[in-house]
Length: 54
Ligand SMILES: [Zn+2]
Image 1 (cartoon, rainbow, N blue to C red):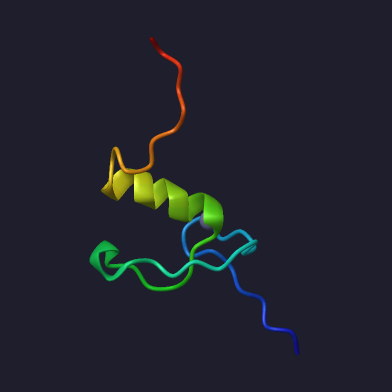
Image 2 (cartoon, rainbow, N blue to C red):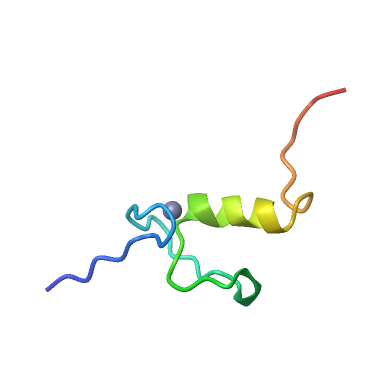
């Protein structure tokens, strides 16, 4: 039997497995997309993109 892991947020397949941080009060695993989304939610500014707005 193959164990299929899915993202606890989007229920999609895990391309990479990320464990949520304790402070997020989540259980399960996150895909890279949801992980970076959560990072951006919880730590705005620490995940800056290169955005040429000036
Ligand atoms: Zn996901």
